[in-house]
Image 1 (cartoon, rainbow, N blue to C red):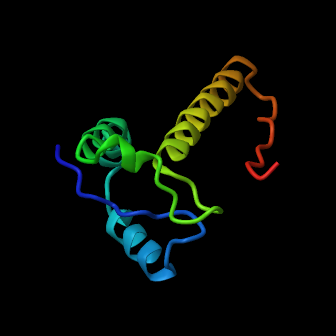
Image 2 (image 1 turned 45 degrees about the vertical axis):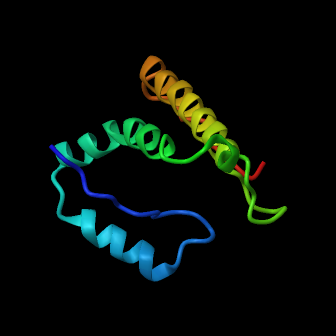
Length: 104
């Protein structure tokens, strides 16, 4: 099943209108379609990044902004963190999942 682009639906630089439109687009999706979109995420990122030269992966629009490479590391770190938290939730049924604050 092909999954249309959702746009960026989170983050401090996302326009509220853009986030609302993206949420509206997926609001009626079935659970399997949402899982499919999630499952295709890494492949879609990989295919998209291949269209840009590596030198652009290091470009930062400003000192405060992240470059593509930093964003990729962040995604990998978040995935690893989520895996550990979910694995612990499964292994320790009934216990609280540790809180997560990315700013800390």
